Image 1 (cartoon, helix red, strand yellow):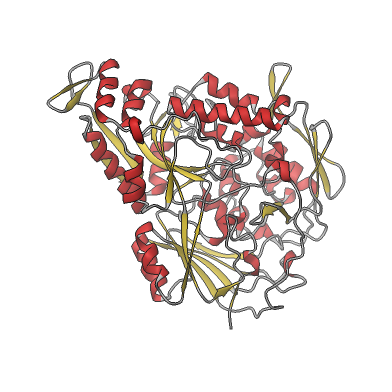
Image 2 (cartoon, one colour):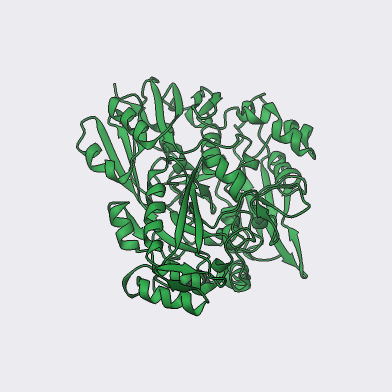
Length: 588
């Protein structure tokens, strides 16, 4: 799913999975100053008019029932109708949304107090209260019956046993998370989720099928005045339509939002949506690198280039239905040494990316470069050395063909989502590069939902339950060896990426497991990590270890290029562009 203007609003993102270029950023815990909450409009109130149409391609959302979502597209759709507790401006300052005041953290780092605004209500007029949040966490997200992917974020180990953090309602507007152990990044976990209305959701409690299929949860009728737009319709693989919410709580004084409708329009290919932008049929879309120069020279279109918190990587299948050779570190190193990152960035991204060697992007305050295994550049881009590594692992060359221990040619598959031309191009480049060390690669371009359901989700033998990580013995419905996919990193709380790289991580679809990595992620959640310098060392250690162990070949940190009609005003360019999108408007 390509970036839309609202995708910026969910900037306290965890390690999110995305089908295209995802954007996210969270403000630094060490600089939790709150920005002024009264935003001055460019020129007073603006007339409400027009339909904002964002063009997307590659894949539609999976669900509007957000607790079940693992993809950014689903969360983006929901975020049009519900703001959430906070967001961040372009200076990384906290901007309050549903919260009436900043989160209060006790001196011992164990209690987090959140106070809701008193003017928020659900679709049936009942108020949003602290009980809704407590119920959502205790009875839904952290329950045994609901497959929520981020449960680990709300667990702690007490007396050697794993248990959930306590969540209690203090009064109608106030609730608390009460921990028994310190977790320095927990601030970002308590502020980045929505709630369900207790009086509605409890009708489906304990019944996953009923909850999944509940019409009133899937059509977002419950969202009330909680976001700038109200749900109208979702035509799968075609469009998602919302209309202006006249009761929007942030619009009481200024009349926002100023668009009559917002539509997320799905196109079959990037070329189709970019042609639609050129023709004036849509308002905005992300631009492939090849198209940036063209649109920058086009009258009536403004192009914005921003860094992202996403990375593209070539992940290996460590599970039993993937090639066993990839479980050997020497083989992973050989493959990574054979794929040139500089040429990839210049030929495919046209320079709109930085080489990636681990999972923490450069804009993060925890980014380090020293000590990373910089495979694919300089001396570590060397196919002859790669062949030597393969030989040491028991894989020999014969007539420029790599043979396994049985003397059979090594033939592998690489999958990625169809319609994403950047990823498709990466797949062909990887195929070409690995041919240089004798590996025959078959490329499979798959619809996004097909790739998730048949190749990424897995289940253990004898267990009908299918999820993104069902343990070491689980395998996907269809076998695969390598996958080009993107994830996002919470820039100020990278510990959230344990959901991808932790052995028990809910999005560890690949079966990767390293006890040392697990231990460092746990250490990032310890009391000693309250010390910023200690936390810096932990994240440096994680970056280094992951870059060396290569659970994936980290390829690039892409920049995002967005073309937007020049008629749209009120935009504040920057790394969190879109945090104020409810104030955007069409000029008269």
